[in-house]
Image 1 (spheres, rainbow, N blue to C red):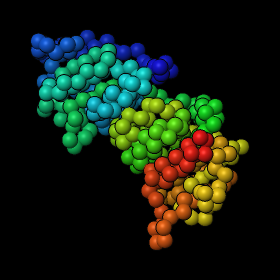
Image 2 (cartoon, one colour):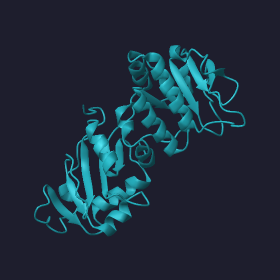
Image 3 (cartoon, rainbow, N blue to C red):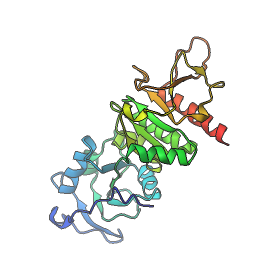
Image 4 (cartoon, helix red, strand yellow):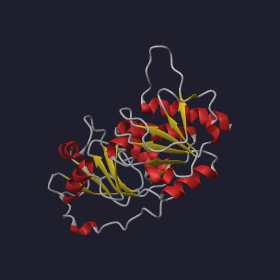
Length: 273
């Protein structure tokens, strides 16, 4: 189902530069071969690779683009490198030369497919309601700054069946290009909210701690309203009512936050079964 809240009216592409070259025969639905970095489409893709505009999301790689499409997102633009055969439904599809594609790509080894779609965070209360309706705690990231970790956590959350994710101040943008890639596009299967520490007031919130919390096998985390994961440097900063710790082998200090999230999420899934 499309995210009607986040859809924006597609721009009138007719003013964004005349076609530089007619599409080659047999390339269905492609109206333009872009050969110049000065083309407005190329400039826009380069801007989005470095700074996301509100509501706009840059997708890179065939797997991410297919996953976004499968999750019901409408693609405003699909851009494919000239040597790549790839098609998904999009409002507009263009072909980029290898030189132009490499310039607009945000990755070291581009896979030949980028796209633009639209998605915006939902209110915190909406994400919390969705989690409660599914009998899940709301997964909350508190100062998780690495977009790779944010994306990996979103991927694990979607795989475990969690319906929603919220990020507090200081966390990386779940819809940023690196986080989206790290999630393999699975972030679009979650309701994503932005919130503040104050939103946890009145909730039974369990914070993940490397040490000092109740051991996971003894902690009644299934009753939690929220599960809070902090950044690896500072840990959980938001007010929580309980702490839970994953027991580790001797001499191992802690888990990466994405690994810890996966353990906790699948333990929730096991207890809900």
